[in-house]
Amino acid sequence: MAERNRKSRGPRLSILLSITLAACAAVLTTYALLDATPPRLVHTEPSEFAPVLVIEENGQRCLNFSQIIDNGRQTCLDLDDPDRMVFEYTRMMTSALFLNPAPKKVLIIGLGGATIPTAFHKILPDAAIDSVEIDPAVVRVAERYFGYKQGPRQRLFVEDGRAFVERAHRAGQQYDMVMLDAFDVDYIPAHLLTVEFLQHVRALLAPDGVLVANTFTLSDMYDKESATYAAVFGDFFNLRDGNRVIIASRGPLPDDETLARNAAALATTLAPFGIDVDRELQRFSRQSDWNTQAEVLTD
Image 1: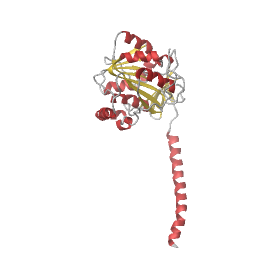
Image 2 (image 1 turned 180 degrees about the vertical axis):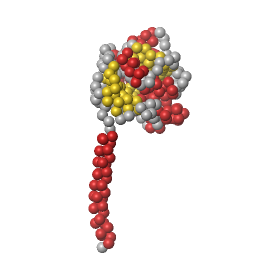
Image 3 (image 1 turned 120 degrees about the horizontal axis):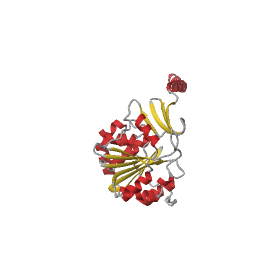
Image 4 (image 1 turned 60 degrees about the vertical axis):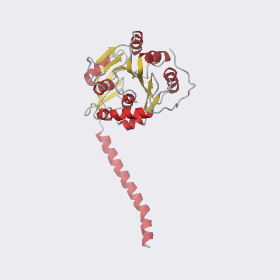
């Protein structure tokens, strides 16, 4: 009888426990909503392309184009911990250092709030970092609100990214790493997606140079983008978490052992930026998850 009573109380206790946990969750959610602050517009920078907005909410300062609230931010800075990378895609792009942990010359197309140029200036104390940004308004905002500083190792070119790449190619320049992170209000500008553009980019890479490109996981262009990168670079690493980051090399891709060894050597250096090297390594997929017969994008 006693045993039967315990069994009969089990479901009731489970129900009561479920109700209690649900109530606690509701209270915590309510407090979280009360604690969340609505976006506050700090500054609007006029631009010939789209107004550049600086917004603060929940301890973060963010850059966006045109709208305070939409599906995403271009850049966000943790006001209490400025070095920590807020977005996954910036951590994924930085993990390209697992292929080449000590690049001496880095080219970044697209400045935004300068998360990566600023971080690389600290991570790579011997590297020269060239950034290209088409919109002077973005530059002004990055300098005033996001701590971007130009200098001998941190050079900035205000012009179209493709024009810079083609000129650098003609001049015979080479970079150990080229990072593509240029977006407008809608998506990556079309002239920065074609096979002709990527051929110029590949020509800029040193023999062991690395290409890093920030794109979208959910995009109507996914198959065509993938086919275009494959047409120029062959196999590449395909990192996905919200955004998709393509990491390719002018030479053969390194094996997993090399990636792991380089990641381990960088672990202490990258930790202050919120980068867990073991977690990032898990994203390095070699799988072709697109239609390999998709059309290649051309000019």
